[in-house]
Image (cartoon, rainbow, N blue to C red; front, side, top):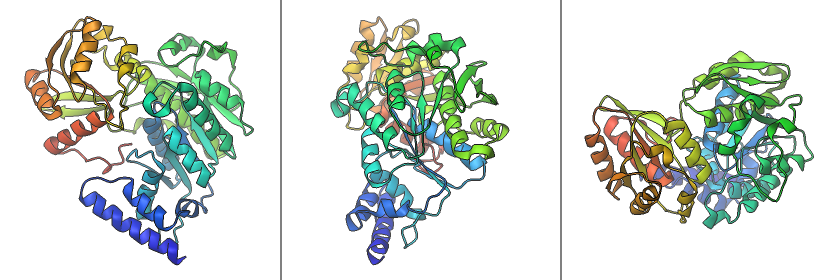
Length: 433
């Protein structure tokens, strides 16, 4: 007991100091863990409503935010990691302000997004009751190695879940992982009327004869996404329809995330699940930090769009790149982005050809401009410094909408600058994840 109390106090102190200095999201968790190595297990020992791990290559932050919003709308108290720190120690750091000296978290449910690799560390300490498996795509190959490794990590997460798994029926890697678990599985996917959109959303493996979504007919508790337009859609269960749902974030990827969150919420809540409450809650979720977030700059919208791998960039271009706007692309290759940016050559930038790109920026600004050149996309300027690039971009296009496609650390840097200049909430202040 004394050791746990000491760990909680030390972690809280470290967190306060780290926040005062503007960083260190995982450091307080490390401090607490060093003093009491099993503090995470102790903290979650009293959770009775479910411990859910959300993982996959794309959409973790958005889906987690949606799921938490739906559960809270149903009256549940939910702990989550709202700043998007998806490492185990980052989760612990977020938990510290809510921990009493006993080290036991008081909450009905826990919903955390976890990086695929760090999910393994989490399940070593705390077996989740449920997991939500989103998708598998090539991402940070310098860290995760081949895509098979990522798929294996997610399969292990599903196998570790003690009560249920929610899985993407349309992702062949996830479908194979879901078929291998021993607990009940609920599937989400696209309605067969839009199955032709699957190639832009999923990775496929030539070693397997992967069937399309129609080969797995929906069963009890499974959901299918049926769009109405770019923001409105229905989530169709065998005995219930949730909808129409109208999101603040546009695009098919956001709708899929909402369908995944709704399928999970229905599994967790059982008979308490209410379709109207769910539709309202989803409609009130603001786009997470940099995931299609719109910031008003001098009377014009500036849209921040996070991109980090071929599948995600392709979906972003098809979702956001089709409406008129001046475009900037900011590419970094820091650790959090992935050091290898050769993945840019697996993305087609043809949709930017007519208008061109106003600026490329970031550590790999020149690499990005070269990549655009190979797709016959003109780049007006190359400005590696992000703040200088932002100033030039805004000044050159004062009277029109603007859009910035950016990797993670570039997005964070740009968002901090925009927050300071336009009075926006800083990272973590409003639970943007």
